[in-house]
Image 1 (cartoon, rainbow, N blue to C red):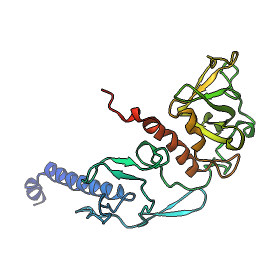
Image 2: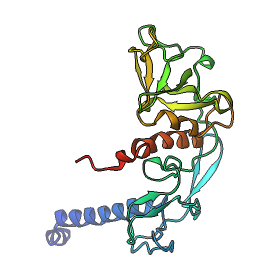
Image 3: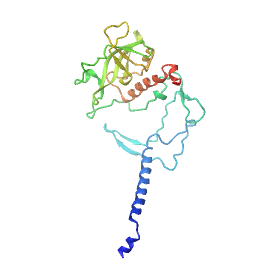
Image 4: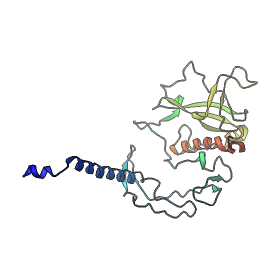
Length: 264
């Protein structure tokens, strides 16, 4: 009797159907999970909520962070920051054109996320990004050019300031930022330059023999004074990292009008 029942069942087909059902469920699960951030959607023009369709937003899930804090996603919070830009066309998804100073508008390559306003830390809880003098086991390789004391040259070929310190990532063992003094007199201030935007050369600036230079083509020499400042000396928070990097990112497109023109 058992043999007769099994003879009428195509086991391979049942396994195939089972795989299809499992795979469909997996896709549904993954598509729900990727909606924990950025949803529900909002209309670009009206700001009204857009239907999420057949696959709905999942229920909140608790995430336990290393610092003991617990966050939930999705949390239903909207990004209420004022957008300092306006669309160039009246349809949804149109490019945004910055208003006012494009380097601080927070749009395009200058966009930044609202990360926590606390320093990034190592697994032991110590600050992760610090001045090299605070990281006792770190030093500039003798065969490399030490950027400290070198002039900072902007994209216009003019000197904007002088590198005063180097900030290192003690977890990744690399330089993250150059600290520089820009401006003179009452306008003098200390700014942070992301290392990804800086190039250190042994070739000196004309008129300064014996020195190298640090070129930052993203900004003009007159634009360094508006780099977002740090609230506390010796530490940089995750939010400050976002804003500083976004400022230099914005410069790659908005520092001069001709950078916004087509390449061809």
